[in-house]
Image (cartoon, rainbow, N blue to C red):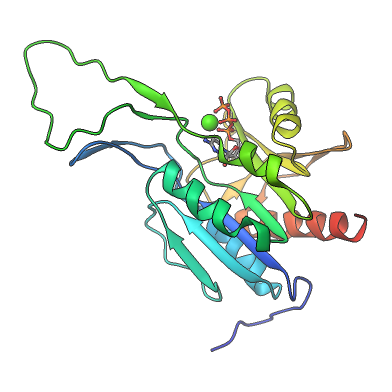
Length: 225
Ligand code: CTP
Ligand code: CA
């Protein structure tokens, strides 16, 4: 088996991509999740394979087929499982891109039995999940670490805060209010915010094209480290 048009720009590099939503169980039949489809993360995983990398894809539940050329796939459901999968292999990685839409909160208690309805309202208590990317930012040594920011308001200011707080090399800032950006579609409109303060606005492009752009930036950063 082979990949068409495979190049060697990322040959010998270990790349970890996270993709999709997480699911946080409430009881055996219910969970909390979000609108992520995994398209951006799967495009990133495939592009890294095309460029010759050894790719590990850590994915929440999606309806997508695993792209060709991926070396290792770790399927997870909860944010905690994603945290464990990502931190256990972080040391070996050269590039880590966190495009997954990780749930910030999880139900405090997971009921073993299906919760029955009663005549009163139900209050669900939620606990904070670990911020995986923040934890990776603290562990970072040689890795190029890239995050995503999904925003409906104050895109640049919010993304800048995440970039700094999570110790990223750059962040891909997604304006969810723009048509053609964000979840589910095949295109994205983003701004790249770099640790040195540079901001680059990219035009609307497919998630495959954006993946290529992202690796071009990463390769530039690796050459200048
Ligand atoms: N992220 C993560 N672990 C979490 C939450 C987010 O690793 N528990 C990562 C995402 O994968 C993404 C980045 O952090 O790369 C930003 O996610 P986002 O939801 O935009 O930001 P948050 O820091 O969670 O802040 P908020 O949702 O309040 O805007
Ligand atoms: Ca969040």
